[in-house]
Length: 203
Image: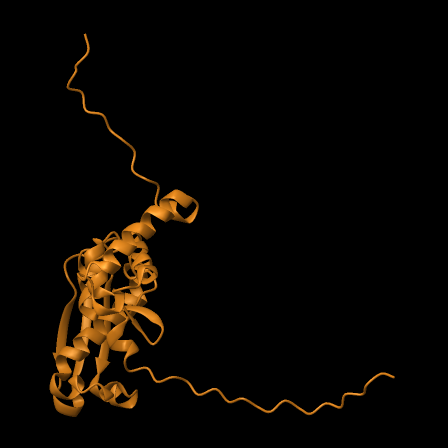
């Protein structure tokens, strides 16, 4: 006797199926187009299905809801970037550390230093990264006015994202942090004149 109420299970699509399955890619593009036309995504995604498609790909790889990625990802200086707050949130729930990232603040004014710390879950190792206001000024981060109005908060974010990039890079999978990208000055490339060459026409 069989049980007519048995539950039928189906297999989930393989991760990154869209890279080798045209139908999966076409379906994902249709979904991206709907998002781009919805008016419910940020301005930099509206009317841009290709950008929405990439955001959906990031959402799949990071295990985040698509709407979260649309709100958190932006292109800063040509690179997909997210916020320090989102980066910290992902690190705290990643399972890589025991408890959330914490901070210790020492000094004040010009001598302000903030240290971000955490304990690696697998090894029990304590990891710490310090960032100072003096470093912020030396590297030009204070071009962002928030370093003058809320320096401790900005150093908290900066120290935490440095901690993540050094010890837990898999948390962001290559995404940059917009608070860092906004203070990066484009490098000046020195282009030297090519040496003149004599071209002799063959007769």
